[in-house]
Length: 364
Image 1 (cartoon, rainbow, N blue to C red):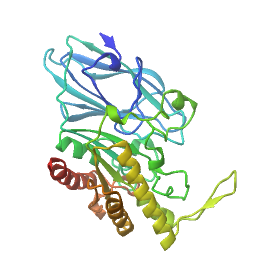
Image 2 (image 1 turned 30 degrees about the vertical axis):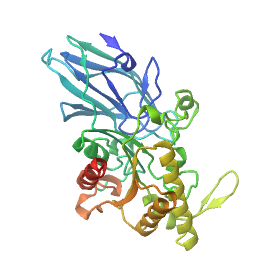
Image 3 (image 1 turned 120 degrees about the vertical axis):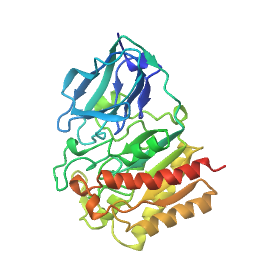
Protein backbone atom coordinates (compact mmCIF):
# COMPACT_ATOMS: atom_id res chain seq x y z
CA UNK A 1 0.00 0.00 0.00
CA UNK A 2 1.04 3.59 -0.50
CA UNK A 3 -0.26 6.81 1.06
CA UNK A 4 0.95 10.26 2.08
CA UNK A 5 1.52 10.89 5.76
CA UNK A 6 -1.43 13.29 5.74
CA UNK A 7 -3.68 10.38 4.72
CA UNK A 8 -2.54 8.37 7.75
CA UNK A 9 -3.87 9.92 10.97
CA UNK A 10 -2.04 7.33 13.07
CA UNK A 11 1.31 8.70 11.84
CA UNK A 12 2.61 11.52 14.02
CA UNK A 13 4.18 14.43 12.15
CA UNK A 14 7.18 15.82 14.03
CA UNK A 15 8.26 19.43 13.80
CA UNK A 16 6.65 22.54 12.41
CA UNK A 17 4.97 21.91 9.08
CA UNK A 18 2.24 23.13 6.74
CA UNK A 19 -0.79 20.81 6.47
CA UNK A 20 -1.41 19.67 2.91
CA UNK A 21 -2.75 16.69 1.00
CA UNK A 22 0.61 15.91 -0.55
CA UNK A 23 4.26 15.84 0.44
CA UNK A 24 5.46 16.64 3.96
CA UNK A 25 8.27 19.21 3.85
CA UNK A 26 10.80 18.81 6.64
CA UNK A 27 12.12 22.24 7.60
CA UNK A 28 13.96 22.37 10.93
CA UNK A 29 16.27 19.87 12.62
CA UNK A 30 14.36 16.90 14.15
CA UNK A 31 11.35 17.36 11.90
CA UNK A 32 10.06 14.07 10.55
CA UNK A 33 7.54 11.36 11.40
CA UNK A 34 6.85 8.73 14.04
CA UNK A 35 4.64 5.68 13.62
CA UNK A 36 3.73 2.25 14.94
CA UNK A 37 3.59 -0.13 11.99
CA UNK A 38 2.62 -3.83 12.05
CA UNK A 39 3.73 -4.56 8.49
CA UNK A 40 6.60 -6.74 7.36
CA UNK A 41 8.24 -3.86 5.52
CA UNK A 42 8.11 -0.09 5.35
CA UNK A 43 9.58 2.27 2.76
CA UNK A 44 9.93 6.04 2.50
CA UNK A 45 9.41 7.85 -0.78
CA UNK A 46 11.44 11.06 -0.72
CA UNK A 47 12.03 14.18 -2.76
CA UNK A 48 15.13 16.29 -2.21
CA UNK A 49 17.18 19.10 -3.66
CA UNK A 50 20.10 21.34 -2.71
CA UNK A 51 22.73 23.61 -4.20
CA UNK A 52 25.35 23.22 -1.47
CA UNK A 53 24.02 21.60 1.72
CA UNK A 54 22.49 18.14 1.28
CA UNK A 55 19.79 16.96 3.70
CA UNK A 56 20.49 13.99 5.98
CA UNK A 57 17.96 11.70 7.66
CA UNK A 58 18.23 9.33 10.62
CA UNK A 59 15.98 6.31 11.17
CA UNK A 60 15.22 4.87 14.58
CA UNK A 61 13.56 1.45 14.96
CA UNK A 62 12.14 0.35 18.33
CA UNK A 63 14.29 2.90 20.15
CA UNK A 64 17.55 1.99 18.40
CA UNK A 65 19.37 4.23 15.90
CA UNK A 66 19.22 2.05 12.79
CA UNK A 67 20.57 4.14 9.92
CA UNK A 68 21.69 7.58 8.77
CA UNK A 69 22.13 8.79 5.20
CA UNK A 70 22.22 11.83 2.88
CA UNK A 71 19.18 12.09 0.63
CA UNK A 72 19.99 12.14 -3.08
CA UNK A 73 18.57 14.95 -5.23
CA UNK A 74 15.32 14.13 -6.96
CA UNK A 75 12.92 11.35 -6.07
CA UNK A 76 14.10 8.24 -4.26
CA UNK A 77 12.83 5.26 -2.29
CA UNK A 78 14.46 4.18 0.98
CA UNK A 79 13.84 1.01 2.98
CA UNK A 80 13.12 1.57 6.67
CA UNK A 81 12.81 -2.17 7.37
CA UNK A 82 11.78 -5.33 5.52
CA UNK A 83 11.45 -9.05 6.17
CA UNK A 84 10.20 -8.49 9.71
CA UNK A 85 7.40 -10.40 11.42
CA UNK A 86 3.98 -9.23 10.20
CA UNK A 87 1.56 -8.31 12.95
CA UNK A 88 4.31 -7.29 15.39
CA UNK A 89 4.28 -3.53 16.07
CA UNK A 90 7.47 -1.70 15.09
CA UNK A 91 7.95 1.83 16.39
CA UNK A 92 9.67 3.98 13.79
CA UNK A 93 11.00 7.51 14.01
CA UNK A 94 12.46 9.36 11.03
CA UNK A 95 14.29 12.60 11.86
CA UNK A 96 15.92 15.23 9.70
CA UNK A 97 19.48 15.66 11.01
CA UNK A 98 20.18 18.97 9.31
CA UNK A 99 18.87 22.43 10.09
CA UNK A 100 16.98 24.66 7.69
CA UNK A 101 19.75 26.08 5.51
CA UNK A 102 19.22 29.84 5.29
CA UNK A 103 22.12 30.27 2.85
CA UNK A 104 20.93 27.51 0.49
CA UNK A 105 17.36 28.29 -0.67
CA UNK A 106 17.38 25.08 -2.73
CA UNK A 107 17.86 22.93 0.37
CA UNK A 108 14.79 20.66 0.50
CA UNK A 109 13.70 17.27 1.76
CA UNK A 110 10.15 15.92 1.62
CA UNK A 111 8.46 12.67 2.56
CA UNK A 112 6.14 12.17 -0.39
CA UNK A 113 4.65 8.81 0.67
CA UNK A 114 4.90 5.76 2.92
CA UNK A 115 4.76 2.30 1.37
CA UNK A 116 4.15 -0.85 3.40
CA UNK A 117 3.11 -4.51 3.22
CA UNK A 118 1.16 -6.99 5.38
CA UNK A 119 -0.05 -4.70 8.11
CA UNK A 120 -1.37 -1.37 9.24
CA UNK A 121 -0.57 1.62 11.41
CA UNK A 122 -1.60 1.67 15.08
CA UNK A 123 -2.27 4.74 17.22
CA UNK A 124 0.78 5.99 19.11
CA UNK A 125 0.67 6.62 22.85
CA UNK A 126 -0.06 10.26 23.62
CA UNK A 127 3.05 12.21 24.62
CA UNK A 128 3.32 13.23 28.24
CA UNK A 129 4.52 16.74 27.31
CA UNK A 130 5.23 18.92 24.30
CA UNK A 131 8.63 20.65 24.39
CA UNK A 132 10.01 23.25 21.99
CA UNK A 133 13.72 24.12 21.88
CA UNK A 134 14.83 27.44 20.38
CA UNK A 135 18.47 28.19 19.73
CA UNK A 136 21.59 28.34 17.61
CA UNK A 137 24.12 25.77 16.38
CA UNK A 138 23.94 23.82 19.64
CA UNK A 139 20.21 23.35 19.15
CA UNK A 140 20.77 22.59 15.45
CA UNK A 141 22.98 19.70 16.57
CA UNK A 142 26.09 21.06 14.87
CA UNK A 143 29.14 19.04 15.85
CA UNK A 144 27.09 16.49 17.79
CA UNK A 145 28.37 13.82 15.40
CA UNK A 146 31.79 13.53 13.79
CA UNK A 147 35.35 13.31 15.06
CA UNK A 148 36.92 15.89 17.29
CA UNK A 149 39.01 18.26 15.22
CA UNK A 150 36.72 18.28 12.19
CA UNK A 151 36.59 21.84 10.89
CA UNK A 152 34.52 21.65 7.69
CA UNK A 153 31.06 23.20 7.94
CA UNK A 154 29.12 20.43 6.19
CA UNK A 155 25.72 18.78 6.84
CA UNK A 156 27.32 15.46 7.78
CA UNK A 157 28.32 16.95 11.16
CA UNK A 158 24.77 17.82 12.24
CA UNK A 159 22.75 15.38 14.34
CA UNK A 160 19.20 15.24 15.64
CA UNK A 161 20.00 12.00 17.48
CA UNK A 162 23.04 12.97 19.59
CA UNK A 163 20.99 15.92 20.78
CA UNK A 164 20.02 17.33 24.15
CA UNK A 165 16.49 18.05 22.93
CA UNK A 166 15.87 14.45 21.86
CA UNK A 167 17.42 13.09 25.05
CA UNK A 168 15.40 15.43 27.27
CA UNK A 169 12.16 14.65 25.44
CA UNK A 170 12.72 10.90 25.45
CA UNK A 171 13.33 10.86 29.20
CA UNK A 172 10.07 12.74 29.77
CA UNK A 173 8.05 10.76 27.18
CA UNK A 174 7.57 14.07 25.38
CA UNK A 175 7.14 15.15 21.78
CA UNK A 176 9.56 17.91 20.82
CA UNK A 177 10.28 20.49 18.15
CA UNK A 178 13.32 22.60 17.31
CA UNK A 179 13.60 26.16 16.00
CA UNK A 180 17.27 26.97 15.45
CA UNK A 181 19.91 28.40 13.18
CA UNK A 182 23.68 28.00 13.43
CA UNK A 183 25.61 31.18 14.04
CA UNK A 184 22.56 33.27 14.91
CA UNK A 185 21.93 35.00 18.21
CA UNK A 186 19.87 37.47 20.22
CA UNK A 187 21.07 40.75 18.68
CA UNK A 188 23.15 39.43 15.79
CA UNK A 189 25.04 36.49 14.37
CA UNK A 190 28.55 35.60 15.51
CA UNK A 191 29.91 37.94 12.79
CA UNK A 192 27.59 40.83 13.72
CA UNK A 193 24.92 40.50 11.02
CA UNK A 194 21.95 42.19 12.74
CA UNK A 195 19.27 40.43 10.69
CA UNK A 196 20.38 37.05 12.08
CA UNK A 197 18.21 37.07 15.18
CA UNK A 198 16.48 33.75 15.81
CA UNK A 199 13.52 35.15 17.75
CA UNK A 200 12.68 37.61 14.95
CA UNK A 201 11.58 34.60 12.86
CA UNK A 202 10.04 32.53 15.62
CA UNK A 203 6.36 33.18 14.87
CA UNK A 204 6.63 31.80 11.31
CA UNK A 205 6.58 28.11 10.34
CA UNK A 206 10.22 28.36 9.28
CA UNK A 207 11.03 32.00 8.71
CA UNK A 208 14.75 31.35 8.32
CA UNK A 209 14.17 29.31 5.14
CA UNK A 210 14.77 31.73 2.28
CA UNK A 211 13.78 31.75 -1.39
CA UNK A 212 10.65 31.57 -3.54
CA UNK A 213 10.21 27.81 -3.27
CA UNK A 214 10.29 27.82 0.54
CA UNK A 215 7.80 30.67 0.49
CA UNK A 216 5.51 28.65 -1.78
CA UNK A 217 5.83 25.67 0.58
CA UNK A 218 4.59 27.84 3.45
CA UNK A 219 7.81 28.50 5.36
CA UNK A 220 6.83 32.13 5.89
CA UNK A 221 3.28 31.44 7.03
CA UNK A 222 2.33 32.25 10.62
CA UNK A 223 2.88 29.22 12.81
CA UNK A 224 -0.30 27.70 14.29
CA UNK A 225 0.62 27.65 17.97
CA UNK A 226 -2.86 26.53 19.03
CA UNK A 227 -2.52 23.34 16.97
CA UNK A 228 0.51 22.25 19.01
CA UNK A 229 0.44 23.96 22.43
CA UNK A 230 3.84 23.61 24.04
CA UNK A 231 4.12 22.75 27.71
CA UNK A 232 7.58 24.31 27.81
CA UNK A 233 9.66 26.48 25.47
CA UNK A 234 13.39 26.21 26.15
CA UNK A 235 15.54 29.01 24.70
CA UNK A 236 19.29 28.41 24.38
CA UNK A 237 20.63 31.66 22.91
CA UNK A 238 23.51 34.02 23.72
CA UNK A 239 26.57 32.05 22.67
CA UNK A 240 26.90 33.78 19.29
CA UNK A 241 26.38 37.21 20.84
CA UNK A 242 29.52 36.59 22.87
CA UNK A 243 31.38 35.73 19.66
CA UNK A 244 30.08 38.94 18.08
CA UNK A 245 31.68 40.95 20.89
CA UNK A 246 35.08 39.72 19.76
CA UNK A 247 34.61 40.03 15.98
CA UNK A 248 34.86 42.99 13.60
CA UNK A 249 31.85 45.05 12.59
CA UNK A 250 29.64 43.74 9.81
CA UNK A 251 29.11 46.02 6.82
CA UNK A 252 26.00 45.76 4.67
CA UNK A 253 27.34 45.33 1.09
CA UNK A 254 24.36 47.24 -0.34
CA UNK A 255 23.85 50.15 2.05
CA UNK A 256 27.28 50.35 3.67
CA UNK A 257 25.59 50.33 7.09
CA UNK A 258 27.70 48.75 9.84
CA UNK A 259 26.79 46.90 13.00
CA UNK A 260 28.94 45.63 15.84
CA UNK A 261 28.20 44.35 19.30
CA UNK A 262 30.62 45.73 21.89
CA UNK A 263 31.34 44.88 25.48
CA UNK A 264 29.77 48.08 26.83
CA UNK A 265 26.93 48.86 29.24
CA UNK A 266 24.89 50.11 26.28
CA UNK A 267 25.21 46.83 24.40
CA UNK A 268 24.45 44.80 27.53
CA UNK A 269 21.32 46.90 28.01
CA UNK A 270 20.30 46.28 24.40
CA UNK A 271 20.80 42.54 24.88
CA UNK A 272 18.72 42.61 28.04
CA UNK A 273 15.90 44.49 26.30
CA UNK A 274 15.96 41.97 23.46
CA UNK A 275 15.69 39.10 25.97
CA UNK A 276 12.75 40.76 27.72
CA UNK A 277 11.01 41.53 24.41
CA UNK A 278 11.69 37.98 23.26
CA UNK A 279 10.13 36.48 26.37
CA UNK A 280 7.09 38.70 25.97
CA UNK A 281 6.73 37.52 22.37
CA UNK A 282 7.14 33.87 23.40
CA UNK A 283 4.45 34.35 26.03
CA UNK A 284 2.02 35.79 23.47
CA UNK A 285 2.62 32.80 21.21
CA UNK A 286 2.58 30.25 24.05
CA UNK A 287 0.18 31.48 26.73
CA UNK A 288 0.23 28.24 28.72
CA UNK A 289 3.90 27.25 28.45
CA UNK A 290 6.73 27.31 30.93
CA UNK A 291 9.44 29.58 29.47
CA UNK A 292 13.00 28.53 30.27
CA UNK A 293 16.09 30.48 29.18
CA UNK A 294 18.84 27.82 29.35
CA UNK A 295 22.45 28.81 28.77
CA UNK A 296 26.04 27.83 29.40
CA UNK A 297 27.08 24.87 27.24
CA UNK A 298 29.71 26.92 25.37
CA UNK A 299 30.78 29.52 27.88
CA UNK A 300 28.83 31.66 30.33
CA UNK A 301 30.10 35.18 29.68
CA UNK A 302 26.57 36.56 29.27
CA UNK A 303 25.03 34.72 32.20
CA UNK A 304 24.69 37.78 34.49
CA UNK A 305 23.03 39.80 31.71
CA UNK A 306 20.68 37.00 30.69
CA UNK A 307 19.76 35.98 34.22
CA UNK A 308 19.04 39.57 35.25
CA UNK A 309 16.97 40.18 32.09
CA UNK A 310 14.81 37.11 32.73
CA UNK A 311 14.29 38.17 36.36
CA UNK A 312 13.34 41.71 35.31
CA UNK A 313 10.87 40.38 32.72
CA UNK A 314 9.22 38.27 35.42
CA UNK A 315 9.01 41.20 37.86
CA UNK A 316 7.68 43.74 35.39
CA UNK A 317 5.26 41.44 33.56
CA UNK A 318 4.08 39.46 36.55
CA UNK A 319 4.84 36.27 34.63
CA UNK A 320 5.56 33.60 37.23
CA UNK A 321 6.21 30.88 34.65
CA UNK A 322 9.49 32.08 33.17
CA UNK A 323 12.95 31.34 34.54
CA UNK A 324 16.67 31.10 33.85
CA UNK A 325 18.45 27.74 33.99
CA UNK A 326 22.26 27.36 33.82
CA UNK A 327 23.42 24.40 31.76
CA UNK A 328 26.61 22.47 32.50
CA UNK A 329 29.64 23.64 30.51
CA UNK A 330 31.17 21.37 27.90
CA UNK A 331 34.31 19.85 29.38
CA UNK A 332 37.48 19.51 27.32
CA UNK A 333 36.92 15.78 26.80
CA UNK A 334 33.29 16.25 25.74
CA UNK A 335 33.70 18.30 22.58
CA UNK A 336 32.59 16.88 19.26
CA UNK A 337 33.20 18.19 15.75
CA UNK A 338 33.76 21.88 14.97
CA UNK A 339 34.55 22.79 18.60
CA UNK A 340 30.92 22.14 19.50
CA UNK A 341 29.40 20.01 22.25
CA UNK A 342 29.62 16.30 21.52
CA UNK A 343 27.16 13.61 22.51
CA UNK A 344 28.42 13.43 26.12
CA UNK A 345 27.95 17.18 26.57
CA UNK A 346 24.44 16.96 25.10
CA UNK A 347 23.67 14.13 27.50
CA UNK A 348 24.81 16.19 30.49
CA UNK A 349 22.64 19.12 29.38
CA UNK A 350 19.70 16.74 28.98
CA UNK A 351 20.28 15.42 32.52
CA UNK A 352 19.97 18.97 33.86
CA UNK A 353 16.98 19.90 31.72
CA UNK A 354 15.02 16.69 32.25
CA UNK A 355 15.43 16.85 36.02
CA UNK A 356 14.37 20.51 36.08
CA UNK A 357 11.38 20.08 33.75
CA UNK A 358 10.19 16.99 35.62
CA UNK A 359 9.87 19.09 38.75
CA UNK A 360 8.66 22.30 37.13
CA UNK A 361 6.00 20.79 34.85
CA UNK A 362 4.55 18.56 37.56
CA UNK A 363 4.34 21.43 40.00
CA UNK A 364 0.71 22.45 40.70
